[in-house]
Length: 276
Image (cartoon, rainbow, N blue to C red; front, side):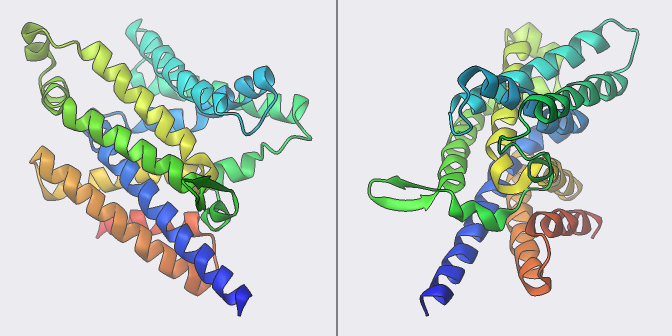
């Protein structure tokens, strides 16, 4: 009986982690879609692994919060490197992503396999993730035990929501009319890197729970689907969050029914819902 209760608790908490991660990614992913940064978000979700590895070598502690800071910082470095390379005019933006992204990710894999072979930095889990395992890594908040991934994603959801709410007008103007934003005195560069920093933090916090592949799906697919339905920005964000929840519920249900990877199934469902 106790085993059955534990099973249902883990399943329920896995669903909560999945939904919270999807919404957190969706509210910021709409701006990535509109700014044509889908490939950049893909690059960030993979290259932050190098930031995690670099931070681990400094603090030598896998559980240290500095790993998240290092990963977020390296996400910004990735964007900066891509912008600098494409800004030379010698290569296009997509080409710059294709150059920087594999190089940084490959360096991370090399460093892990060479110097951290006995450390729990599993590249397969980072890529694919396994949501069902997230409830096993727990923490206590005000005497309440909860999955660490759920707490972190909840905090990040609030941060993303506050950022978009406070700077909604500025984000809207810099997204659709950069020239007018410059004339009006809005710093599009600062907003751009703030958005990229939050995207980096969102990607790395979601690593333990869902893996890089599903992070990309959560960041881009709901926003892309919502953009086909509405051209109103506020409605687009709301619809993308609705898509994210539906994808999570459907992917979770099918994964439990078919006994397959929850992250993989949810990403597949997200692609299917977009095509529908």
